[in-house]
Image 1 (cartoon, rainbow, N blue to C red):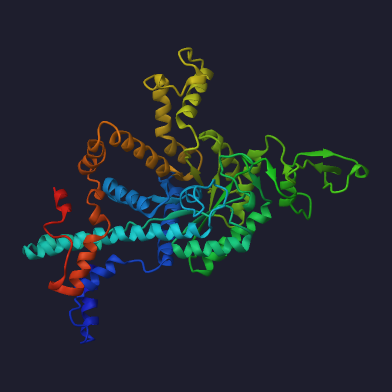
Image 2 (cartoon, rainbow, N blue to C red):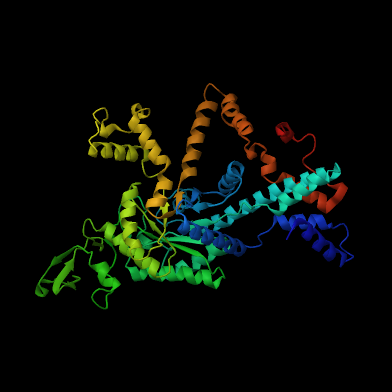
Length: 530
């Protein structure tokens, strides 16, 4: 509804109850606009529709890929979206990512934890709720500023300006964007996965990312020792997510199925197989086995048959079974096809390096079966991007016969190569990586999992070095505040950002001329008016 329509609706409502003295229709309309989303389910339904629209647009034009940055606090997510609106005018095709790694490292009551699903599972849904609380507050703040401008225009008798501002309210784009939320391996069995998924959806998540690792052996995607589960186990959890979405009325919720098979050489169990060639048989075909005679089997040995032969899968002292070396890519392709055929909407292939052709080689095979297969891809800080791309350029040039004698491949990270032709070529490949991978490798969504973990550490290091060193207070003023002012960072007015002006508006609504407001002439935030 338009601003004026909401005011008129509120006028009729207030007129119907003579005891509602001092309640103004415009204040009611403004508060309703500032609280557009009543529940997390409202948000999940709204953002799921956005993602579905973006997925369809990508199918038509791969240049229309989407992006997000990982976040570990509501304030961080809020500031990202405020910055996006400031710099680009809208939030189109830009999301937030909720990283399980950062929840474990930064949000657990146990303190910093590795990415092994040891943190409290409810901390994930709590962060989703927190993120959307901050995004909704950003809406309320920005709309409140527009409402104040409307009041100023009205007081000045500038009806043209007033209409322009009301149109800005009517066409206002919310800060609420889709969040792709990491549910790890489900934190337990399929029932546990379903229960947690409901909490996450109720908090506002429209897209849940789940991985095919064993939940109680779960490892970070870029660490060793990963253990996968048979496909039927993983599909049960995909179904659990779908049931959670459908139960809560988010009919177009998105499931991102992640495979860690490229770097996982172990499985905890032999898959059930009812007949040759079924999905269980295909999973078991990758096991590393020794041929044995039935009479040679020892007590406790596990035996399977393959092509008429009796085989003993190699089992470690940990009771885990290992896959044959070099089968990771094949297992990834099978994982992806099976997940899409059983209800997943998007794929995630966790790789050990950012290499477009490596990803595309697997996606091409998936697309032979499912032509519109699309990926979410982790542009991970676990990759040494500079070194990886300089090595890729070095190897490509060497293969082309180009002279690379000026470069030492083992030392390509060195700053001495920053201004070289090789360094420039590598940087250009990094710059265009997301666009190129979207076109070549079917990547619909690019994210960085842990960016603000690293930016917080870097900026804090710089401030500490200056402030506690010879620069003293100038270290803060020159390195932080002066930059905030000149770059138009909204947080320089931190009282406004924290909601002080919203509170003043409410005081005026509630108490009229008796309101004791904080934004008077002695408020030091007035120093930043210019």
